Length: 156
Image (cartoon, rainbow, N blue to C red):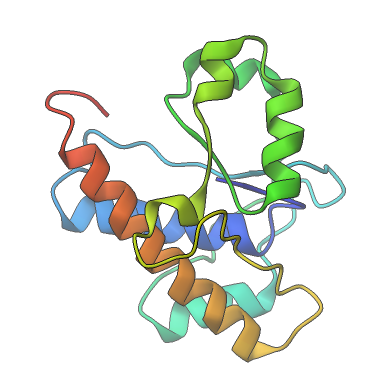
């Protein structure tokens, strides 16, 4: 899960996908982590508003520490999920080969109710409601992503 600084959207997505995978019995098939395209927040916790919205909905985001995306990860990640088109373009530019580029997807592309090319909007300059909207979008997309994973026998 990749966003700008790894303190808002991608930590929310990481926490949600990990929990949903565990709840659906896919916890042993799915490893989830998040990162930012920028490194200005490395080692910082998630934005307090992200932690609060997660907590209000029964998730725990308190252990998160931001990290920057490492292009070497393309070698051992099955999927690299971008929160918006800017992140997607940046990841595609870093991808070392066509196979790696094929593994870069927009998170909301997994939500069948989302419009084509839908993004998870950046809530950083918003308020609590903006973070709640991000959580709603992330939950819907992560459910779709897990349905896709379940449909692939023996793979994660």
